[in-house]
Image (tube, rainbow, N blue to C red; front, side, top):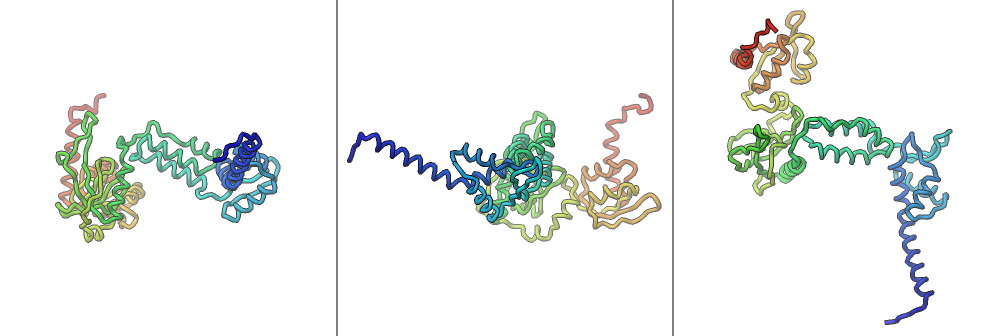
Length: 355
């Protein structure tokens, strides 16, 4: 082993190390420029050549303007839509076409913050990530429309892992198992089936009334069922292959979602309904645009549809007051009448004539 005390040797060694470090930084120059443009520029906020040079200098990279022009051209050839402007106060460079335009990012933010099944914590995290897809200036515009604090959100933080595990079961053609719960008046979890695992064949995820549902085949019952994803816990994929493929393939998911009000179970029945004409939009939104509307006098229309009869269905009809009516079949009309009477009995002691 050779030892030396020559100061010039150590100085040259340090200089060599510094040159190697500078060389490594130079190799990263193109990436630093691209990242700076993506984060700091947009049509309203172009960045100048001076700002680019200063940014590189902060990263320990010295660069001449000519080399930066070459780098910008290389980024253009790579596919980055860099625009040069020279008009009055707008001088410099900006990224024009991005993966997501600002209106698209606003739509994503709206979707995340309005989704009840996404917790407050995860909502904030997702929106912060969405903001990174815009410039810092456009991210401020996204912040102005974020109103999360007082929205009703799920309390189940594991929903994202549930969704991922459900997709694993679907893609691997395997059954999944999970525990299913409901909340008590103390806001604690009460597990159904005495805490035993449900084992089902997952086939799809659907969205209804601001909630996420798993659509799966229950082998024991021999039917398709649905489960609230935010009420599932301890979910995992099993080694058992899925069954019920024929039952699912015979199911039209779009039609299924229209029939099942609020994902409440019940018997599927062909019903005839009568509405005032002003409710056409609401009826089409709920039952779909493929239903046939038949005029019934000048002020009303009727419609026939297959629905799952449940308290949620009765609530939807009664929500329109006297402007909506179930006409047939008789057993559903009687069930509706019984539902209304049971609700009315809770208010029989109220004297509505004397306030």
